[in-house]
Image (cartoon, rainbow, N blue to C red; front, top):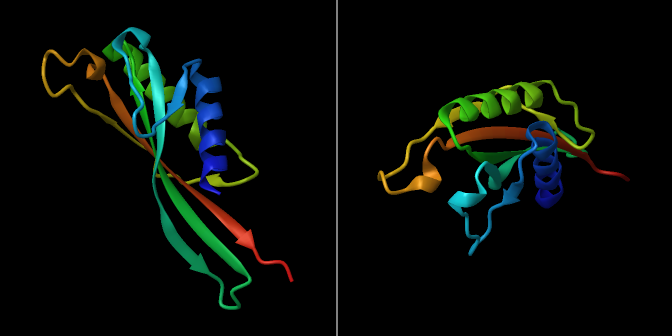
Length: 133
């Protein structure tokens, strides 16, 4: 179930960074005065493959972690910390793929203070489910 993995990732990022990590959902309101914080969102969970005997299924899920820091230096420090810790982390429920990407994104306008120094981190996880007979 995707919610379980998202919760595990959210708690892991919060422990590593000390930031509040919020799941993204319709109607959530993000405020400038609450920076620094991060958000997490499941983007895709549709990639499946199965073994020849169909006794095991492997699936992957793509998550987007968005960091909202107060400065460029803080953005780089937080993103590097998340990337390095996730790359070496061991989870019982899933594994983290080696393709963790970090993309800084500027605000759309100078008045958009919330999105200053924002960065996106993409994380792919894979998990295997075994059918029990």
